[in-house]
Image 1 (cartoon, helix red, strand yellow):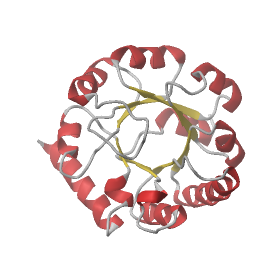
Image 2 (cartoon, helix red, strand yellow):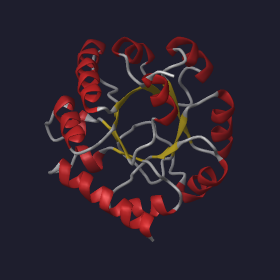
Image 3 (cartoon, helix red, strand yellow):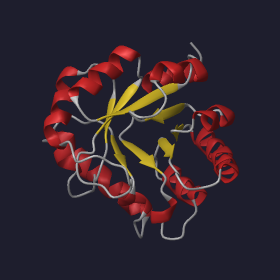
Image 4 (tube, rainbow, N blue to C red):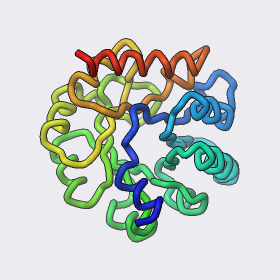
Length: 220
């Protein structure tokens, strides 16, 4: 089993799953943001940019792929399967209305991880059955970083997944330092975070604060 295959099976073996969002990054570029994340111990980064031209996205992803590889971090591309393949990403993350997971698997091959957003028990069980490597669970709280997001699923669905689903999952949606302990306390080992980090005055301090809050919840 090569290193890519190992990453596929353990891609969520970390605490914070960071997403890019340049329009919330206070003038910082995605490259600058990712470099700071990696410098502060983040080991899982997703590139999510909806509005940029594909050429610009390609150039950014090539650089982020280089940075993450140097740091020993995993790199996931949101939605854009061609882009994920071209830059040699470790994974691609898709939604319920994107190409079917089975079709994505045929495109990316056996070594790339596939994550699937889910919002209900039925979607979670279907994701397991169809071969997802991990699922996103959310939005836990209301979020404004996506325009087409559904209503919050709350804690009931998170607790269901923690109890009933046997593949890795990441909690996502409106997670902040002040509420992350509640999320961890209900079974999440990995949380996805956007504006709490990219929009922070001091991103390093924000990462440290999140980790402290998560650790406190684990110790209770």
